[in-house]
Length: 133
Image (cartoon, rainbow, N blue to C red):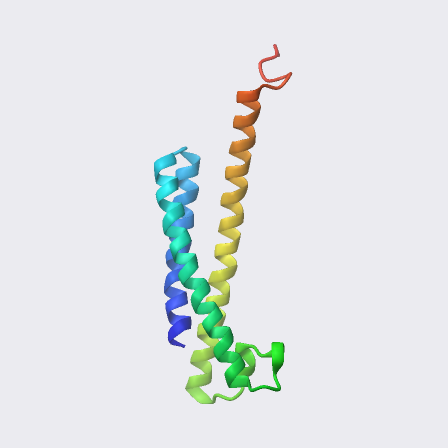
C-alpha cells in the first residue's frame, strides 16, 4: 500500500504537470515546455520503477502457480475487513488517476501535433496557405 500511496501522490502531481504543459503549449512557451518535459520524464520514471516493483511483489504473493494472471485484485481477496477496504479503495483511486493522466497526455500530444502540423504548413508552404479568399 505504501507504493500505491506514493503513486497516488505522484499521479496527482503528474496531473498538475500535464495541465501546466497544456497551458504552456497553448502559449507556445518553449522554455517552460522543456522544463515540464524534464519533470514529467523524471516523475514517470519513478512511477514505472514502482509499478515494476509492485508487479514483482504481487507475483511473489500470488505464488508460482498464478503466473501472469496475478493481479493486485487477486491479492486483495486474501485481506479482510479494513485492510481489504483500504487496499481496494487505494487501488481504485490509483487506477482512476492513471486513466486521467493518460487522457491528459493524449490531449497534450494532440495539441502539440496539431501545432507542429500548422507550423510545417506555414513554414514549408501549401498551395492554399496565402491564396486569396
